[in-house]
Length: 321
Picture 1 (tube, one colour):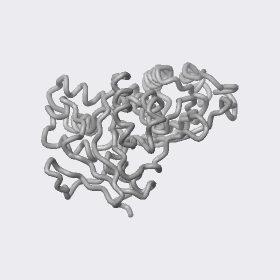
Picture 2: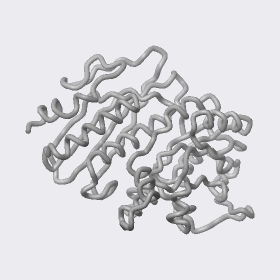
Picture 3: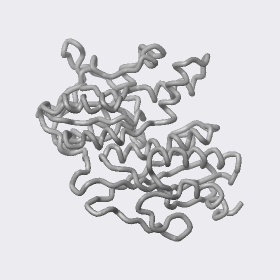
Picture 4: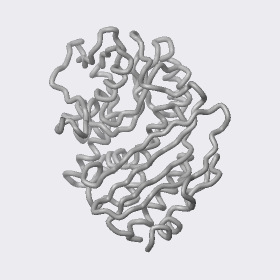
């Protein structure tokens, strides 16, 4: 099967959406940004053996790739618009391509994003890259900078579940309801697009949690030139995580990574409204700490004592630096 036949056969089903003047089939896509909107762009890559295990079902890879990428648009409070996809494949295997493309198209429709181009090539290992584009009102992109002393730190959903899901894949055990739920959290992130857009008027800063709460919150602190205190007892933990991995739950919530939930910073007077909006959407939102003028990040126990020896989170090149 040739490259262009592969694209025509498997990927045209996800190739329509607002603002697409010309999509798949030409050298470049021609896209129209609506008046009064700015374009925000992000790219995510999954590498076999680094981000997913060999023999991972292809439909699961489609879920994970798109969910992780669109989560960056949610972090910017943007509306998803377009996707470009780059695949490096050991071979053009229809038994892999069909379920991958079918699930990708399904998730594209669910998330309101159109596939408008990309590239396919042959290589020794499976590598998948998704570049996503979204719209946001001019000047209203939610950024990492902007946090102020006294602001509260809010996180959506529950944390640590994805790391627990990975653990059940690395060390398979007797299947259970908790196993299925935790693996779903690992494979299929749910970008909090609607929540971020609804909360945007009440926020000072934000980002999504990909490398772990401590690591990603650290990016906000660095960009904003402030510090923070996180209250260990306030971390939102799922029943499945606490039941399956009670000893690791808090550490994984702090540093496990790849939850793709939102970490948001809001002024104290806006917290109640933020919690109300999240409840109306059926999304859990939890205040886990506050921004401080003194720089540095501290994790406090129930007695207000700083905790030490905590992992900061995942860094691809930390061991190489």
